[in-house]
Length: 127
Image (cartoon, rainbow, N blue to C red; front, side, top):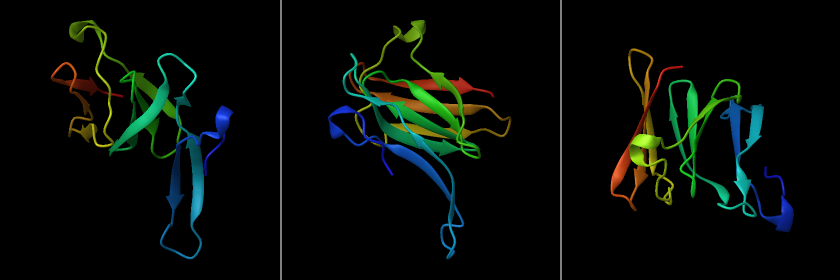
């Protein structure tokens, strides 16, 4: 399932399918992920990681990470590079450039690759 923005470019969709291996799967939600190739910088979704009850979705040019609740599909928050790393990052240009883990104390650690500036961004988040 993809919605069509201008210029007939397919937009990525994040969907949940319950009972997918049964004869009667259900789809509780489908979310059109950020995608705008007319903006500057372009907004294009490129990488996804799942940890605990949350889904982390990284954008290519901005290194913004959108966080969604995996149970409901609702947007929870977002993460962006902060002053300590120059408020910027290189492109998240490979599908596996993000990883996430939920620690026993409920904190999430999200790692995002930045080849241009030779670093790994680490976000720590406790919902």
